[in-house]
Structures are given as structure tokens and as C-alpha cells.
Amino acid sequence: MVELEDMQLFVCAVARGSLSAAGRELGFSPAVASKRMTRLEAALGVRLLQRSSRRLTLTAEGAAYHERCVAILADVREAELAVTAGQAEARGLLHVSAPVDLGRQWVGPAAADFAAAHPELRVRVSLSDRVVDLLDAGVDVAVRIGALGDSRLVSRRLARSRRVVCGAPAYLARRGWPRTLADLDAHACIVLQRPGMRALSWTFRAGEGLHTVRPAGRLVADSGDLVRDWAVAGHGLAFKSIWDVAADIDAGRLVPLLTDLPSPGSAVNVLYPSRRFQPARARLFIDFLAERFAAHEAAVLAAATPRAAPPPAPRRARRARRARPA
Image (cartoon, rainbow, N blue to C red):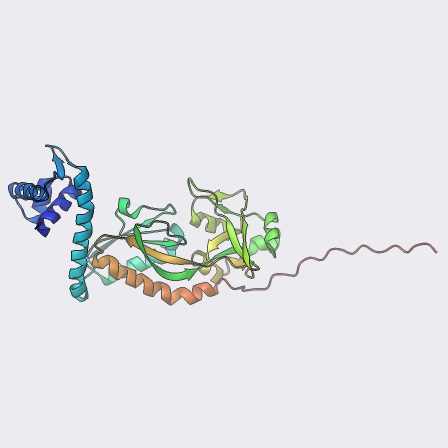
């Protein structure tokens, strides 16, 4: 029977790239670590690691065994947490990822408040509108809006969301209010296009189906917060998550438009790596985020309702009829 300590040594050696470093981390001398690894390979009847003076390399059998060991050790740790969860404290480094706008307005403040409540915790928040690979970047928790896309991740919904067309009062005073989707062709639409991806389309519920608009504006940004800044400055119309613009709408800096043609509903989700031990700091922060978003969900969604009636559409001048000669 293979011992769990030998599995831990093997997994740690792969992570550290050194059997001696793994042994020191687990409290073994280099000689004991080497003997344990030899014993593990003998018990399995296969070579797991190709060892040289400079590096360790997984064999094909070692790679397959490593994947199962990680899962087994995670299950064991989760079983331990099931009976000790009430005593766990948030400590160590918590790495959080979020889009720029959502991160500045919601995730960043929540992370700071969470850190203030847990003095043994350090928090690193990475803001980017690119889709970050959590496993490669060593991210504990990611907050995203919309589609998930990565089957390796576990997700939990934090709040409902939707996108809304919005513009600054000064822009609307100059260019008028769009009343139909066709009116968008005559407006300056600000386009969001992330690197390597198509420009974000604007999708609405019209009747019983969906209608998609692909705006072709002169202003294009790969950052959602720049799109919002341009809209607030009066440079055009933006199609933004209501979580990004609710504060601007409440302050009168932006006006929600085409509210009778809502976009399809989406969600704010929190994601974290699957098949991996989830430390108490990540688990507690996820619960903290869920409470924070739930407390503000109703008010944020309400910001998408019209705050002022649009001015009446201009009437076409009637031509005076000339009297026909008798």
C-alpha cells in the first residue's frame, strides 16, 4: 500500500522541481526523500521521475500518476476541512482576478474590506479585461461577467446582470435619443474589441427572438473602463454591464437607453480551480463576495430602468398646400 506521505513527496517534488527541496519542505533529509521516492517507484513497478543533477522530468507514467495523486490529496484535504472548517482562518496570500471596471468598483473594495477583517491575510488583486488562465497565473478566485468557457473551473453565481446601452446627457442633447435599433446606425457607437477577438456585438430581445447589432464606430478600445470613460465624456454610446455603469447612471453622468429592448440576462460569476484544495482564504472570500453582491443586486439592476422620458421625436415640417387655380 502506497503511503500518503510518499504521494505528497512526489507531488511536492514535481511542484518544486527538486526532490531535495520537497524533502526539506516536508521535513525529510535529502537521503530520506530519495529513499522514499525509490520505495514509491518500487511499489508501483514504474519509474515516475527522470532525475539529473539539475532537474526532474516526469515520465509518461509519472504524469498520469501525478494527476491522480493531486486529486487524491485534494480529496483527503477536503475531508479534513469538512470537520475543521469552523476553525479555519483566512491567512496567507489570496490572489484575485477581475475585469478592470468590475474590479475597481466592486471586487477591489470588497477585497480590501475582507483583508481588513483578516489581519493574517495578504491580498493581491489583478485587473485585466483579458481572460486569465487561473491555473497558469496561480489565481485563487476570479470574478467574471457572462459566459464561463473553461470546464476545468468551478463556478458560483454571485448576481444577475445585463448589458445596457447608455450615453451622456451632453451627447444626447447633441445627437438625440435612439428609439429603435435602426437608430443606432446614425449614432457614434463605442466599440469594445479585445485582442485576438471579434468586436463585441450588441444583442437585444426584440419580440420573441434576439436581434444582434454589430456597431462600426470610430472609437475602439480593448478595455471596458476606457469604453465607459469615453461614454461619460460624451464621445458616443456604450453597451456596458449594468454593474459597470450603475453608479454613473445614479449620478446622472449616463442615461440608460432602449430600455424597452433589454439585452439577454447574464450573471456575475466567481470561478476557482477545480480538482485542487481550496484554502480557507478563498472559500471565505467567495462567501464574502456573495453577500456583497447580493446586498447591491436589486439597486444595481434598478439602474437599468429609464430615469427620464426621452424628448419627443422631431416632427417633419408640413409643406403648405398651394391653392389650385379655379
